[in-house]
Image 1 (tube, rainbow, N blue to C red):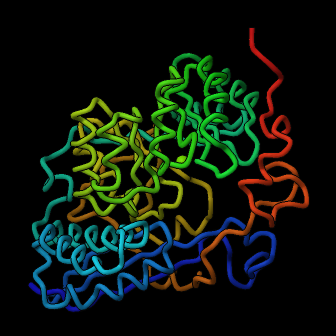
Image 2: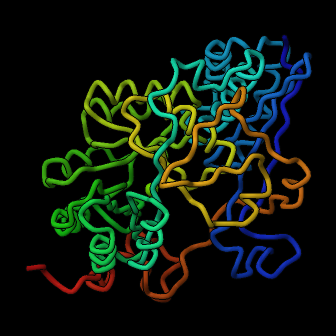
Amino acid sequence: MKITDVETHLIQVGARPGVQGSQPGESDFRGSRNWLFIKVHTDEGVHGVGEGSGWPRVIATAVQDLKHVLIGEDPANIDRLWSKMLVAMMGHGQTGTVGGGALTAIEMALWDIKGKVLGQPVWNLLGGCFRDRIPVYGHAKTPERARELIERGYRAAKVSFTGAVDLDRVWAVREAMGPDRDVMVDAHGPSWMNTQDAILIGRELEQMDLLFYEDPIAPEHWTGYRRLRDALSLPLAAGERVSTIFNIRPLIEEELVDVIQPDTGRAGGITQMRKMAAMAEAHGISMAPHSGSLGPVAEFAALHAMATIPNALFLERIEFDWPGRYEVVTPVLKVEDGHLPLPTAPGLGVDFVVDEVAKYPSVRNVADMPVDDGWAFEPGTGGEYPYVQTRLQRAGKLRWKGPRA
Ligand SMILES: [Mg+2]
């Protein structure tokens, strides 16, 4: 069997062409993003699907650039082809999100081909499963949303800090979830928080019995994590922006976090996810893959990988971001009792619907600056240098009612 072609399909997620908010500059376009789905074709009519997240429009170009490395090769030799692609990218510097996303999409599709050829789900080719359903966690900004998640069987919810740090909101969700369910906080490693801020906030969070404090500072800032480690008695999580075992190594080897969060769309592929998990396992660290930018193809890959990983904690899930999520792939995953079922069809068990994908052509891929509403930025300074401007009026950005009893 030989690889004959690689197709890339980009989708504008969250903004529908021809409706209000679908054009750059219109309010509903803000925060929309892209998904990149690919198809690897073979001379025997079998095709594999994959997805690369991170910076999809750029990754699509990287995938097309790598095509000549793949054409004529036997898709069965997944690890050899992965190494060949990595070497082909050497001249471009670090692998980064773009290289990681391209490797990921292609490697995922090669696993899909192998599973289809052998008539087995991918997880069964990776040592079999530890579990036949994968626990997921949701996002809750309010106690009402937390209660909704509980009703649907969720056992964990995450509170995001978007802009200001609202500790009262964390308390409200913590109380709604009760002592038998987990709560996490994601600070998103923002440029407006330095290590000392993260320690100050972490000391408040220590009282809230969190499962973890995610990306308190930018995940690439290893030395800051060392200081956080020493200063806080609070489990830490990071790694969603990192690809390959080489880049996640300091987080694991120095035991800077308790949970690593590689993104199944850009970590480098299913095998890289499993290698990261094995490195983490040796350090007593678990894995909770990121899904903030993932589309529904990579979510299937995450399920296959997590089924085979002993230290897989749970999967992040974005459910109601965009109705098109449930139109562009088949079959559609549905959460039951806080879990996603493990796919059993040969390969990844998912395909994307080319005609549906074509309805949402990619327009652009970079988010707008945050709204100048005084929440994340000092009003009137959103366009200025955020490292400086966001240092001002600290009390307004660290919103809580004071020390707890
Ligand atoms: Mg995150």
